[in-house]
Image 1 (cartoon, rainbow, N blue to C red):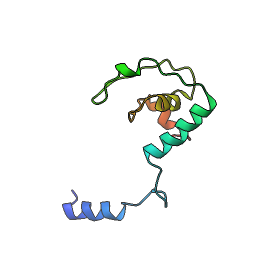
Image 2 (cartoon, rainbow, N blue to C red):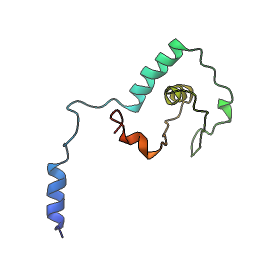
Image 3 (cartoon, rainbow, N blue to C red):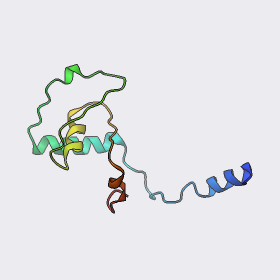
Length: 96
């Protein structure tokens, strides 16, 4: 079994392994870009947004009509979103 010191040294050495050499865009930057793109390309109408809680957990389960659903949902809802997907999605070359 590794000692605590070995574990800490190993983690510190591998801290930057696999990282991109520039800062990743933040959620707000990505949302601003894609939100503007969606609003420029489509006439986005949100119905019932006043019924969504401002804070706390919520589950949104839209019909999945296209690959753009997540991007459009992010443009339509003002809260930061988390997405669920089946494990096979992470086995693709694009996401995995």
